[in-house]
Image (cartoon, rainbow, N blue to C red):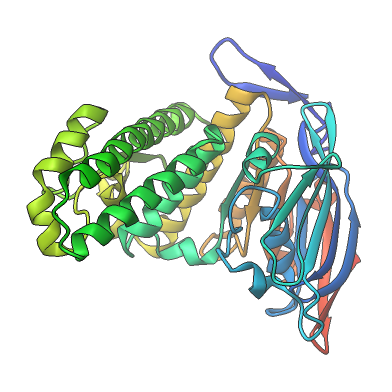
Length: 388
């Protein structure tokens, strides 16, 4: 049965799973979160198949799980937007997490317009601490246009994968963005104080070089996890690129020099034109040699699924446990054969995957390998019933 295994590393670097799931949410409780006045789930480590009509509240469950990791969750919503209306009392998410043989109690909440709070095992904690306990990857419908939309979404996708390997990556990118905003303010105001620029550029160069190193390390790991993998999904050759006029040196000293030399051009633009914030993730469908942006909609979705699975395989190899995988409306653009292949790969990885779809038929082939939930909604309140 999927979800009841331990990890065995083979000499060729591949993984077999055999005993209890090593990273899983075994209890989830929601209070006044989105469309849920209250919800309590007791889970057993298997994947979770959630189905129901559009608008019933399926995605809200996955969003709640994503809030057990650092950041704003997979919707990138403001905390006030997650509050159930009309009560507007704030919200709370509590979970039991089985992580590498250790049980943890996680709570995160917002009340009365305050900032988000986190408590782990009864003690106040920073959000970054969540990243060390619950490695998490996800694929949501807004990412279906990832390869054809702006570079910002692809950077975010890459940084999320990078964060799964390096929990401090989020802090580093936030610190870089803060220093860049301050430099941009000076540029926009036409300030000519070299010492102020030098101080900010020193921060940006140190942080920027580390961001680039982390991203490239993640790409190497994802690439290795795709090599020789037995999968029904296409291999994506991925690389980190930048606009021709915005190359970002890997060395901190070199980046500091580039930032200094580019001040006049940046001042004319009113913003920083060079740095890791201009980087882009390039992908090519390997066997066809076709850029992802030129592939069909189904091929683009398959490439995304392939990268998420590769991310999970790489984490399983590196940490001893696959991450929690969130797949919202994953069946869109996947045919029956690839859906079945996806379910088989998830179970072979022994990953706890949370998946949504509009009907139970979209999860045919999982049977008792998954914990099935039906979500319904009445008068703005969602309810959940166990179906298998």
